[in-house]
Length: 131
Length: 329
Image (cartoon, rainbow over all chains, first blue to last red; front, side, top):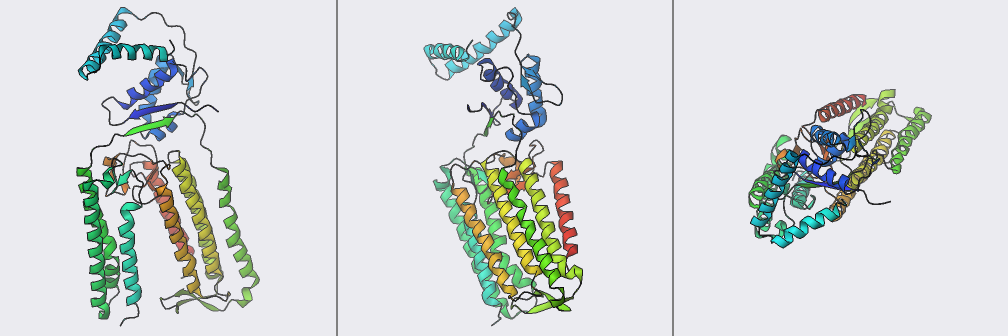
């Protein structure tokens, strides 16, 4: 049996727990670790295991369902679904991503990471996500 | 010299020894019930905390011994009991003082949670069926007593003092004869329900299975102990013999707990430091777990921030009160 996918959240981080769950799950969804048809733990179970409120996990699942990744039918556990092909991001959305990336790159440079290293990290992430 | 003095001194020293062990019978992630980096225990700050704590416990044992010897001739039962428990009370106070010191001195530790994304439902381990055979003991004891009903004296003892002399008696009635068995059977049932609640109300992991095993062992102990107590009116053995399993079981339990806690691969249930009060009361309304792993010793405690936990505790207390009422008086 292949090892189960794991998510990791840091409760002392400035990033809200719900955002960390969304980000961690999205990475697993994008890179194919969680293919369509995969069942996710129930909101109750995941909240229990992480030691956080049900609403936090519920909000994370709803966000991913709105993005088209999950099927959240009442009374059933969350399931990964095949996502429709996405149209190219709008110029406004693209600008939003650019701002986020610029902030992140600035943070890395401020922390002393070399330009070439940043470029290599971004390339390796893109390849790793199997896009 | 009072006959009870040696045993009082022994109890005070035993309590002191347990208090000395307290910082070591906790999961390694915690030191004085505070989350610390793994190197903190052996740091100067950690060693100083331990030294101060040991000194306080030794002083409390000396105070207890002096009090017990001095109050040897005094009348009244309360003062010797207070003196015997002085190492526990003063030791706990010292533990809480050191807990505050460690919280100040220890560098902050991140609270990272890693969880497997399993959609499988929670299944009890197969060996949980082992909770059923203990019911045979009270049933067999009841059948045995029924067969020997005529051999049971019209009045028989139900309590013995420290010198193994009967000091309370009861008349031969069905309640008096079968009461301990009903109590034992009820306790087994309550322990089984508690085990199930603990299993489904806590986080997954090896630590949970370890606790369930401990509960199963406790169920066997209760079944055997109450079955043995119930046959005392007709069985030819001294009631003081019951002290042997009564002391042996907790001793074996302590040895097992220390072994489990020393196992570096044993996972630890993570909980935030700021939700623990006095090192042993957990209150976190955001945590859906009803039972969480204790920080002192090995076992589970309830999450007082969870309303279901209060309901369970109420039910547990009501069940115990109802069971006590079944005992002969």
